[in-house]
Image 1: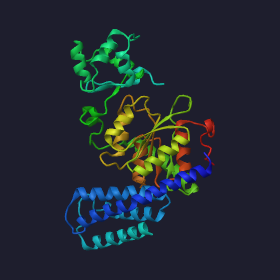
Image 2: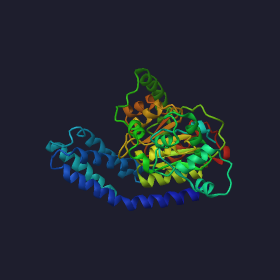
Image 3: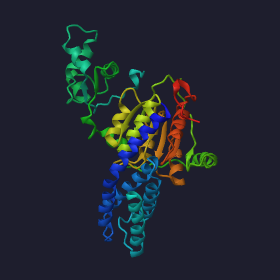
Image 4: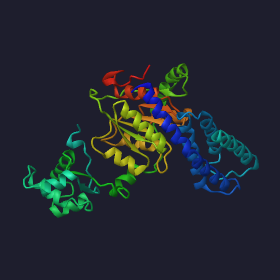
Length: 109
Length: 276
């Protein structure tokens, strides 16, 4: 396989990944909306962490390092609350919101 | 080429006839044994192996039936039904939620390997690419089968295409049903690339189950995951992984790791040509 072939394959798959990014961000927003009120929703918490984890792993491979790093930061922040299934404290919610806003900016850049 | 005895047959299995199997039944002549032909008639995509044994009036552990089914699968006359996997007791057992807990000695060994590997990874600028243990394997002859367990569809597609370009045969799995199917499909995988956080399964548990399984314990496993903490790496290595690669990853590093674990020398069969 030539470097050109490899570059073409990566370009096509990176474009596909970017196309799917708004959908993944919509999932993140929907889940965070449910959790940001402080309610206990273990399933939403687990799904949000997994969505962020997937983003953190894939984005960097497809050339979106900032998206990957922001998703990893958000995942790491939420892991603290995984067992509780809720972000009960105001300061925690503010911090997660801030990290997710950074993720949104990176994803829309 | 797998041997017939490497094909797992359990009484809960449901088999279907392949195109070749149907043709064999409809054809005018056959070289199959009477038992094999009888099995081809009884295999209907619904009956379990236990039910087939009952119809044949043989014991639940009758070896001849097991061997005949193994031969039929090996020769491409029959295959495991995809539909039967959902409620299979084997599936439930394989993916039981029993926490995967490596032994203390395995953890200590993993720590040693991780410490030595961390130096390497720091030199290469990656977070983790450590502890590649070459698996004890046959001489590589090309076309090794790699089961890619990855739930991100785009990343899964990339891994499949890239591995196939590099000369491997790639199968993909995104959830527990597909993983079990991929592990049982013939020929069995020569290597599993295993993500950790899956929608309905935990990669560490899958690794532990594989290492406890008589037919799967020797299959090399490379963890490929965004779980990049030291604890996660140690858990993977102590659980019996042959290597641990964190996402995001450099494609060349992945192929280097795959070749290392499979014992494939650089540039053999034209693979690894992108490796520095």
